[in-house]
Image (cartoon, rainbow, N blue to C red):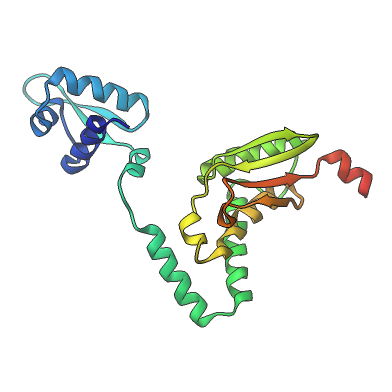
Length: 210
């Protein structure tokens, strides 16, 4: 993102609700320039505008950040989660930790209706891609050498997973729940690979092996 647009986001975050005039003053830019950047940020879904009617004069346009814009600001959630897992491991057995993580992942899958997988494999894969995307994994499906391969282009747990690899069970459980079958992981970012990939057995192979 351009430095100026990031500065606009930061100014809106500080002001909480900003106007073109307040942003222009804070950043020492012209109102025309501010409007240009705001239009771009709105198009990217990072800023929303609301019209506030006043008792006197014309309504004013107030700009606020969307939830999507929060990713441009630092947070320490991974540190908090890491500390929680440290405390859990100090008092619970590995089996209990895994059970807690599996239960959490099962609840996530159930939230998306993953208890009763239905439809063709292709339909389930598309649904899985949507669900993993909503959870921050940016997944994609490809056919490689006749095999169906699910690739996670982003791992939202990569920082936690470096110390607590058990969190990988979360997406594994979601995948199994939505597809209704096991998959074989063929690469992992925690092992130095560029992405996490899974080989999926298609319906014809399942039928032939049953």
